[in-house]
Amino acid sequence: MPTKKVKLEKSDVSNKSQTEGWFYTDTVKDHFFNPRNLFYSNEDAEGYEYDAVGMVGSPACGDMMKIWIKCSEEQDCIKECKWQTFGCASAIASTSIMSEMVTEGDGMKLDDAMSMKPKDINDKLGGLPTRKFHCSVLGDKALRMAINNYYDETNQSDRKIEEKTRIIDKLSKTTDHDIEEAVLEGARTFEEVQKKTKVGIGNPKVQMDVEQLLRFYVEKYFGENAL
Amino acid sequence: MKEIYLDHAATTYVRDEVLGVMNKYFQDEYGNPGSFHTIGLRPKRAMAQARETVRDIINAKRVEEIIFTGSGTESVNLAIKGVVEKLEPHHGPAHIITSTIEHEAVTETLYYLEHERGYSITRVPVNKYGMVNPKDVEDAIQEDTILVTIMYANNEIGTIQPIEEIGKICREKKVLFHTDACQAGGVLDLDVEKLNVDMMTLNGSKIYGPKGIGMLYKKKSVKVTPLIHGGGQEFGYRSGTQNVAFIMGFAEALRLGQSEREKENKRLIKLRTMLEVGILRSIDKTFLNGHPTMRLPNNANITISDIEGEAMMLYLNEFGICTSSGSACTSLTLEPSHVILAMGLPYEVAHGTLRFTLGRKTTKKDIEKIIEVLPGIVETLRKISPVNVNMDKLEIQGEKVYAN
Image 1: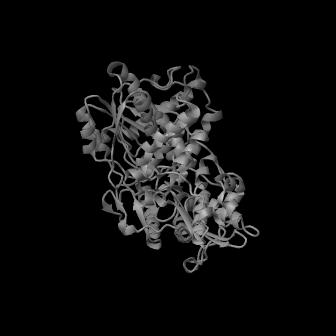
Image 2: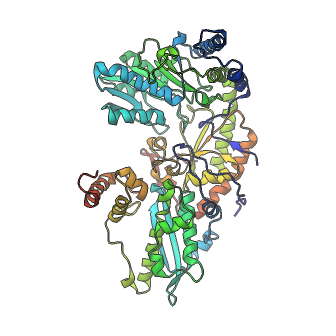
Image 3: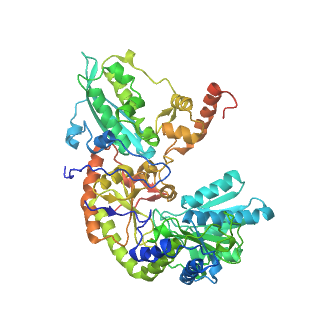
């Protein structure tokens, strides 16, 4: 790889939007500039013998993640986790640190990996700026997808945890459950739901569906006059 | 490590000559130009001189047509809301025409008028080069259209709009016309008579002048209600003690910029072309945004497919190269830049745009440095990325993407 070694300096991100200042933690920067568990080359990627793969997002919605896992059937845990991410520094760092979290020590138990939340990744990174939190929401989804696929491959389909939900936006794979969660976390407008879930980015025609669900969940939890 | 600043569309440094002119007005000539004693009179005279300088440059008829404000954004607000407040008692909420690629100063002001004040807004589209068709403006004019506001040159892609023609149409149809010329100062012809504009916004921070100073040219016959009431400074249109130092700086920056623009434009076009050719040749799956020729000389906006703009920007930043990106991750909305989308660029690649805006201190060496490091950055990020967009299948508003 001809790329020059990037020297980290104490400079930080600058942004043309002045509304809210933001800084990345050293951990984010470290994982962004020195991502872990990558393939060394295209050949390496093509020849990689994995047990299962999971992929979410699309370039149109701004983030896309693909995760390859190798598991130990005896130990019921993840042994290797390779990944590729299209996205900003937060997205890249999130996937990188997640790949590290699931392979640390003897590897993470599949049950634990299955219940990983974006917040766990965010905490490990030392916290992403609020408006970048959404960049970390796809990694765990891709991981769950890979584990489900692994269960299928290994005759353990009964262990699959399907997100028994309806997909509202195929591009971002946002479900009605995601919108419910967003409402519970305080979202009250389409834009706020979008900030938390990425729904409708690159696929604006889902906005009406989302708004309908938004009204439904707000009424369900907060009463008819909450909007 | 040498810092290479290629974000001059965001803001510029203050030129030495400009700072030299300003310095005197902080401690020596600090008087209030509204005072009647000699300490107030001297800055008052200086300010009058500055106003005349600006009037001559933009070919306004009277000095009262030059209103100094606190920023470009304030000038835009004064132009739009000023007209609205003046006319609303007579007409009620009316109709305003704009384009889909305006700066937030315009878009947000109009959004407010639309959603909170009942105005109807027509946003005329742009073509794949980011250019407004004057005919679309003409067709959009209605009985109750009170104002057309369209920028002179775009801040992201640099496309220069046919202001003269749009202005002519507005004159014929007797509709007021404002242009946001913040990116045009020191670069393009600012003759308000030639441009057929009734109002024009300029600002200091893009023309090697200070930040926190803007100007609105407002033809005498155009009536606006001030945003800020008080002591009646700036002919009653903008109260508040004038910031004489900044006004002096603004006038000097504009004077220098306009007198040197032809020579500087030539120099910038040379460097800009070198940068574009360098990037498009050395990195595959890239293309240029904005108009091929009708574009600000310092602007190069390039889409690099399969990777995301903010990530590239941060890598460049580590090499000391400061740029900006139209990607969603550098905005608050999570949508890619509205300008990039308005040109019809598909979402698949809209996240991968980088904007380089060159300036007076940009050298050939700076450009060489970018061409040297960017291919490696792109290679690194493409290796991490699972995306591989098929450029042959990408279409911009029904046309094939003009890949290099």
